Image (cartoon, rainbow, N blue to C red; front, side, top):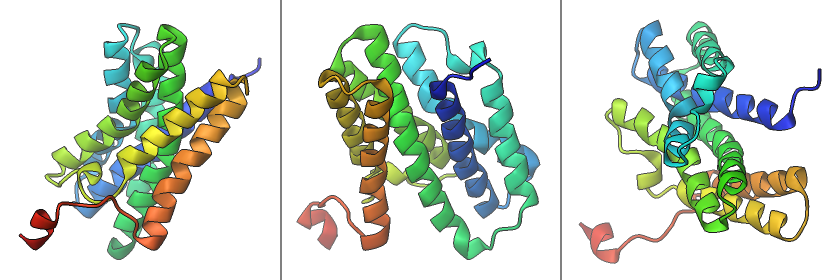
Length: 206
């Protein structure tokens, strides 16, 4: 039996985002239950909000494999030692990978159900960033997307690129690849070169 490529990509996105949550738990020196909670939040949070908005079945309720993958990522992270100084960097890269997958997958599902590219882009961004916000709030930290990093912008770029690809007749898989690559390049360049969106000069001086 062939496994749909979208399902594989979805599981990969869940695993990577769950890894980011587990790394956040490691930085906070939580126990194994804390690892699991913080792994599940970013892994399914954004997709859950997307599905509730679309009034469709919540994806992880239909297929429990998503929860199992998130828990597996938590256990693996708990068992593998990562130096404290490396955890935040690894978390940022895991966020970038997860974001690049989730923004296009979220946009794909929204476009298929609504046919509206504006809603597709909006819900692609929601899918990509809401879970990370939940993770950071639980950790009592300012969410990454509210700092100077440009994760939300990257998610929007990826979702727009996907929708443009579909509109131009590039096909589903090629459009997903195009959007995912675009979404990954933006935060990657931000991490490597320190790119960020401009902030108010008044805020910068305060």
